Image (cartoon, rainbow, N blue to C red):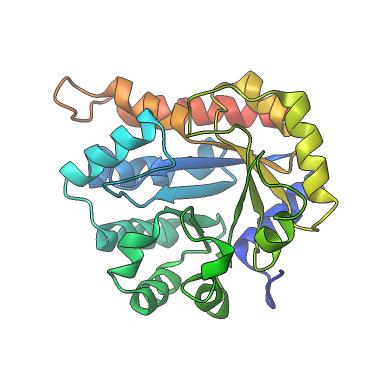
Length: 277
C-alpha cells in the first residue's frame, strides 16, 4: 500500500535511494531516563546521522522487547513518562527538525485507552509520520491501521523469518512507508543476525513489494550495521542505543553528563559505517 500523498518517510527513502546508500533508523525510548535527557537525545539524532527516528511509547508489558528495551521502558515509566509527554517530545523535535521522519513504536494498549481517534489526531498534529504497533495484526486493521492511514500516517508492519509466502500478502496489504524485517526469531537485542540469510530473506520480500525494507532486531555494532545495510534499504538500531544510555547512568538510574554524548557518539559511528566512512 502506498500513500496518496508522499510522507516524510516516503521522501526520506527516495533521498536514500538517490544517494545510493542504506539509511540509519534509530530507536530510543521516549522519556528514558527522564523527559529532558530524552529530549536532548532526540534533538541531536539527525546531526549525529539518524535518517529516521523511532520513539518508543513506554508500556508495562512489552512482550516483543528484550531486556535492554524493557529496562528503558521501566525507567521511563518510573520517571513519569506518559503518552502525552511522548507526543510533547515529538512536538519539541518537530519545532527544530522539519524533515526527519518520526515513527512511534510500541503496543496497542496505551493507544486504545487514550483512545484511538484522539491519539491519531494528536499524533498527526504533533508531527508523527508513522506507527509501528507490534501487537496489531492485519486481521485487526480496522482498529488502528486503516484509521491511521486515512489521516496520512504510515502504518509500518513487521515481517519475520517465520512469515511465509502464504502470510506475506496479508502483512503487506495495508503497510506503507517501509517494511520492518525482524532479522531474528525472538525478542529484540538477544541474538546476532546472519547477514547472508537476512539478504536472502529481504530479497524475497522485495519481490512482493515496492516498499523499502529496513532490517532490525540484533544489530548492535557499526560493522553489523554495514553488513546488514548491503542487502536492505535501512538498518534499525535500538537495543544498542538504549543499552548505551543505561551504561551512562548513575547507580540510581539518573542521567549524567555522559548520557547524551554517549548515545549520539554511537549513532555517529553507525551512520558513518552506513555511509561508507
